[in-house]
Every structure is written in structure tokens, then in C-alpha cells.
Length: 509
Image (cartoon, rainbow, N blue to C red; front, side):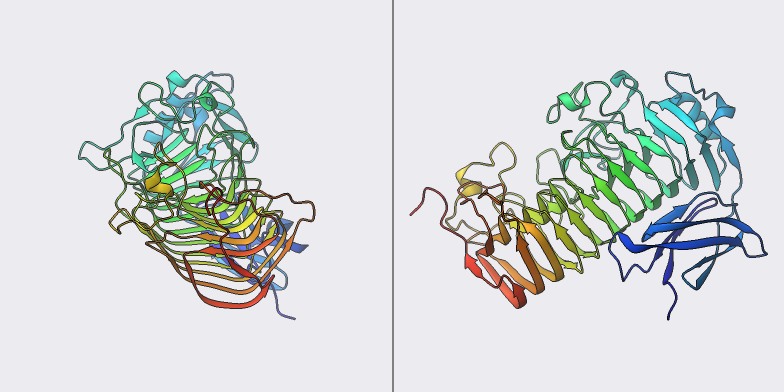
């Protein structure tokens, strides 16, 4: 019998994150696995059991060699060295303070390169804080960094840097936004970790009352905002209750998010879980997401006179994640004008989301979505497990003839292009509308679609409903693969095996 396959995903001065038997399980293991952590020179540090494939520990010492034992296998690793450990209490932070932002910021500024800033046990109210390069923010077990309710305590970040570079976006357009609770702008080598909680305060103040509007010329805050960063690790934390998108990395490279719990009220507006925008080399592993909108939404800007990100999102891996209750589990778009490519989704469990894999765009977006792969996943109670829609009715002109016309229009730089999507070894239980839907433009068909070993069963009590957000769609119930202006390259081992052209749009002959 072979031992457990252990992989070290991340390590900092006082934390480490691992995956165990990731190729054999989804988010959770079939049975709990006992593990034991020892110092390399002897002596038990801690031990426990895990039912999760990805898990973390944050009770380590810097610059120390360890041995992790689990399932008959051992892994040797060392924590990073640390120049200093500072505690926010030593800079004036108080549990009874109405706003600890100034004290925490003083601690950040005092932290030397390679240091760790500790937020200890207790609930610490704070306005936005800004991290710097080469630091670790450790939010310990039992600690909660909680946003204050007063919106006036949140500075407004401009849409652009002084040199003209886009600093932040709102739904793919360069816009001013309220600062987030935790911000890192043009930073590198940043670790945000621990067993504690980051609470964005969405239920405090008026954030959820103006989801598509502005206040003082600015859009709503996120909870963690990363702009122009490189080499960032987010591990171990619970991040919840965001004013808007929960974690928003923009223009980032080499980002790891692992063993996070991301939570939002199911009725909270636009509280997406994790939205990488114009980012490259992103790894999402072992995330548990249950939010009020999309769980993971991959973005790349949208065309606008105000300006948009002009770089793609590429090389994203999503593995061993649990995504529940959101509008979509993994969503691409509709902001995809800069292009989205090379997205690999493996061994994930989608439960109770409106859609599983969803790609949404429209005329006017332009850009290309390509090389998207979903493999070895389970979807349960997902209304439409695979949905690709080129008629998404977003924005003020979303219902216009230009966006919704089924007649071919001239191809231009505003014409979106979708190609190379594969779905392999995926089981769906309790779908409602159809096994999959593809609505391609007549002037730009969806190309190179492959299904292999795709099994779908339906909820017996399902009622007919529209499977996607576009005009003129016919409600569906228990349909097979519905395809309009779509070219398939491989279809093997399908259940149900039926593939149909899309029904005629409602109201047309």
C-alpha cells in the first residue's frame, strides 16, 4: 500500500499549507487522515486529523526544519526566516478601540523587510490598512480583523496611478473605488495567513444598498484588494461579509490562494468570492466558497472610454475546491476584452450553484476565451452545469438589437471569440434545465468543444426555466446539450447522449 501523496503548497515564517492525495479526492477526503508534525531535530510540535484535502497550520517557528507525517508518508520542509515579529498591541491597537487602522498602519511601517506582523486573538475593529513588500500578515487563531461601519473612515482609491497606469477597476472599467479592509498596491513577496477571520463589514453601514451606484464618485469597497502585486500567498483564513467582491486581485502575477473559507450572505449583492482580473499564474486550491454571487469569476476588463485592463488573465489552476450556492461556480466574463486563456479546473465540487462552468460575453466585448478545461469534477443540484453565452444582456444596451440580434453582424474588434473548451470525466446530479447550453454568435461560432465521459442526471421535480441570461431564450427542462452556432470536436461517452440545435427563440418563427 502506498502512502499519502503530500505536497507543500506554501510556507511562510510561521505557517505552512499542504495538500494530501489531491489527485484522488475532491474538496474532502472519504475518511479523516491523521497527521503529525515534528521538528526535524526531534520533538512533537502538533498533530491532528483532516478531512480536507488542503489544510494549513500556523503555529510554526521561523527558519526551522520540520517533518510532516501522514498516511505512511513523510515530507521534509523548512519555514522561511524572519527578521522580526511585531504585535499590533505594541503600536497602540486596543480591543475596545472603535478604529485600530492608525495603530496597525504604524506597525506595518515599522516592520523591517522580512518581518511578520501579528494580529493576536480578539476582535480588532479597523478601517483600511495598506501592506508593504516583503512582509507577512499573521491573523492568529481566534483573531478577527473587522471593518468599521463608518464609510467615511474608508479612503477613496483613484482609478489610476499618477503615471497613468490603472490602479483599480469596477466591473472591468477603470474607476475610483473605496479602499478595501486589506490592500496591497504594487507590492511583492506578501503573505496574508493564519487561522483567523477577515470580516469586510458588508452588513455594517450602507454598502449593500447601492450595489451599482457610486457614493462620492467611488464604487464599493472589496475586502482584500491586490493591485499590481507579484508573489502573494493567501492561506488559512476565513474571509467573509464583503461590501462587494471579496478578494480582488488585479494585474497580479504568481498568486496562490489556498485553504481559504470565503463566505457572504446569499442575498448580498455582487459579493463574488475571488475574482482574478488581468492576472497570470494563479493557483486556487482547497477553497470553500459560499457567497451571494459568483464563487470564482475570472475577468480581463471590458471596453470603455474610461479605460480597461489591456492584459489577459492566463494560466489559472483551480483544484480541490468546494463552491456552493453562488450564481456560478467558475465564471469567465463577462469582462473578458483583454482575453482569458489556459484555465484548468480539476477535482472540484460544485453544489447548489445556478451554473457550474459559465462563460458569458456579448457583442462589444471583443477578446478571446480559449483553452478552458474542466476535468474530474462533481456537480450537484446545479441548474445549468455548463453554459456558454455570447448574448449576455449586461450593461445599459444589453437588450439592444446590436447585442441580442440572431442575424449575423459584421466581425470587428468588438466581436468576442470563444474556442477550445473541454469537459472530461465530469458527473452531474440534479441538473434542471439542460446538460449544457451553447449560444454562439452567428458571425462568430463557438469552436472546438469537446465532451468525454460526461454523465448528467436531472432533478425529477425541475420546472422549465431559462438556462442563461439572454433575450429570446426558450425555457428548458431535462434537455440534452443545446447548441446554437457551435462546432464540436469530440463527443464520447455522453449520458444523456442527445445533442440538439437550440430551440427557436421565443416569439420567432
